[in-house]
Image (cartoon, rainbow, N blue to C red; front, side, top):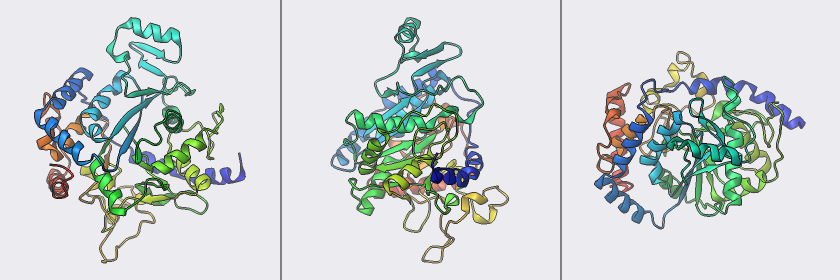
Amino acid sequence: MTATAKRLGQLAAGMFFPLLLLLQVRDGAHLSSFQQTRRNAKLAGSDSNSTKNDTVAKKRHENAITLYCIVPFIWSPQYLSSYHAIKATWGKRCDFLKFFVDPVIGDADIGHYNLSLDSDVRAAGEKNNANLTVPDDVIVLHDMHRPWHTCEGESNCRNIWEKLWRSILWIGTNGEGSIADYYVKVDSDTYLFPENMRHYVQERNWSSSDAHYFGHKLYHTDRTKQAPIVSGVAVFLSGGAIRKLGTLFSQFKPNNTTELVYGCGDAYIGGEELITAICLKYELSVDAEHTLDSDGNELISIGPIDETLLWRRAQGSRMKMVWYWKKKPDLNEKGEEMHLCCGELPIAFHGYKDPRWMYKIDHEIYSEEFGSGGTGDWKQLQYKNANTTLTYLHRVRTAMKELELIT
């Protein structure tokens, strides 16, 4: 390990606990079954209004900015309801949507199968189980060498960093690094607004050929010689940045140790934010850019929207959120408090382990397009601070309609 990498590791050591605090999301104790959520997706997708408005949206964005959505995923029955919810809601508004998975699929009940082994591929096929069938929009990263299913209880089991860099490498080596203007790595429990992202980029008149790395910047990690990072909730990269990263990642050598390495390379680590930022900053000279509206308010909510709407600096110590506000500027040029959640054209909300929330939020924003959909079990969900949340979502829907981002 280089001296620089060691210094980065020391500086970063304190960041993971506050990040874990952020991930106190709704885990969906009352998740609907895989079959029921799949039925919701099918019925929602067949809604006539949805078909009509999808056609309008496609025509409107025909010559607009294109977005490639990258979802790191695990192909296991317990997560498949999220796959179908994403496909039925925000995922259909991406120009390209792909889920990148480990080669090992299944679970303890139906068995684990390594799709990099011919014998396991045959055995999975013989099971005749729909949960072991990988669709065309799911990319198996056969070179991943860290199993997710044998290290229960360890935070590094997610191996999101290895999955992310191998996903970007796959995109580059398979000729998909130039098919979109922008790319986003988005968590499977994030709700994304592709239309608002396109508007955000258009407003800034950026060129996708330049290298841009943007999202919700975490200021508490801004220290000397440490790369500023973007929260992994939704990490946006321009086509120029994705191609440079693909070239860089093609030079990586596998690191077979379990030592935590905070340099730009393969590493045994759960989250991806820190090393992504290190590679971009110190190898490609690309800094993190913060997605804010014209008043300096957040456009990416790193928690459930009905909670983050109420986050305030004065409550920071009581809410154990001091790290969240640390180093964020207090006031904008008008003398108003900034970095509040959220602007009227949000780009992402995070924290929905229960995929039924995807349907609910989609219905609030795209009621004409999405319809009631499915069996309606998502209708039972209740927002915290319902009046505040519904008022805000109404403003979002109105703002999007005024700009003709939705019909």
